Amino acid sequence: MKEITYKELTELDKDSYTLVDIRNEGSLKYGVIPDSISITHELFETDIEGVVAHLDKSKKVILYCTRGQVSLEDAETLCDFGFDAISLAGGYNSYLSALMEQQEKSGDDELAEKQAEIEKSIRKKFHKTLFSPFARACKQYDLIKEGDHICVCISGGKDSMLMAKLFQEIKRHQKVNFELTFLVMDPGYSEVNRKLIESNAKLMGIPIVIYESDIFNAVDTVDKNPCYLCARMRRGHLYSKAKELGCNKIALGHHYDDVIETILMGMLYGAQIQTMMPKLHSTNFEGMELIRPLYLVRQDDIIAWQRYNGLRFLQCACHFTETCDSCSVDGTSASKRLETRNLIAELKKVNPYVESNIFRSVENVNLATVIAYKQDGVKHHFLDTYDETKGEEE
Image (cartoon, rainbow, N blue to C red; front, side, top):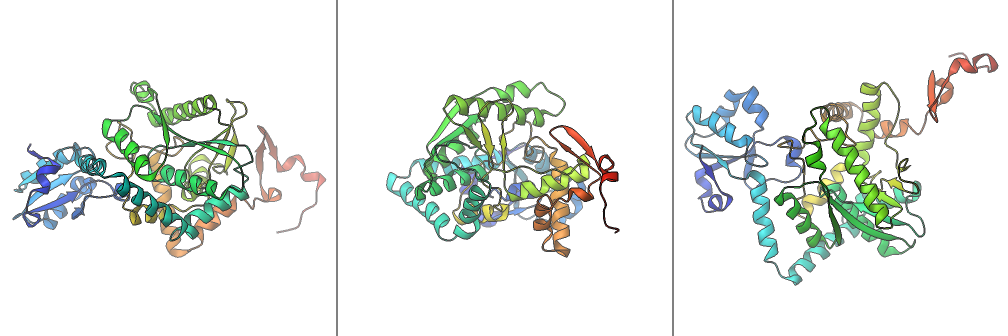
């Protein structure tokens, strides 16, 4: 099957080909190659006739996925239908590599100007939607205290990179004295993923500390729930390294949407009422805490900031998958999380307040109307004190 490099693509007449992005809709939020159209790989498997009808046979069709693997298969399928179809070698990652090479040629003044623009967008255009809820969460949940040394854990995605910039911004106000360390754990990233993190950190003015681990190799041989094991191992490594660096807290980039999805998932799939807490004491690392300062920040606002600044971040570093679909938040099943996300989106069409209602539901628990609950590992049942109390008739 013939492939084309990104350099060769840029040399073609744009009217001579159709560029098709076959990644899933979630991937599109992280960026696309300009002038491409979206036809997901799923449609090649479920509605190939519709795909064929949508494309022009008089033009060359160039397909790309994340790494240039799945697009080879879909290009071959189109060839069977009489198309001149080829795959972009290296996929979307090859486009990112080209952008990074271009950035490396930029002078210090140009990089400083871009960094200033990014920081200005946080202070001005996105102050209300990003900085304000970030600062409010820090104050409301008492996430930053005098003398803290916070390890800002950077995965390379949009959430953690923005979190780093928000921490820099809140520190600039100097209302509380605290220290920051921006930590990147490399669990076995591919060369392009590692380079993308380093490139973005340089562009955004984030002084990262990188350390190596072999987590990806360790979970390679695991057949059952490798994502869950990977998430647990990465969390443990982060705690350990943060403590070694003198930190007393690690900060993770989970946001408001992660919280409400977790609440609903617990009810629908776990038969329990629980939430993703804004902060937690570590049970295995004495004196350490986990904080989530993006707790009140909406994902759509993060995406808007990313697009406004023309930034492209790491989506999924996992080498098990072509996309991020099988990866997850805190090791939970991504398919269930996606189902829950879609359910919330549907409910929102009927009730625009459904998201805030889900979020607030765990702040308004009435124990007098709960059949049973657990506290400190002990189960309490309403019958335990039923005869000792008098309630009102419903």
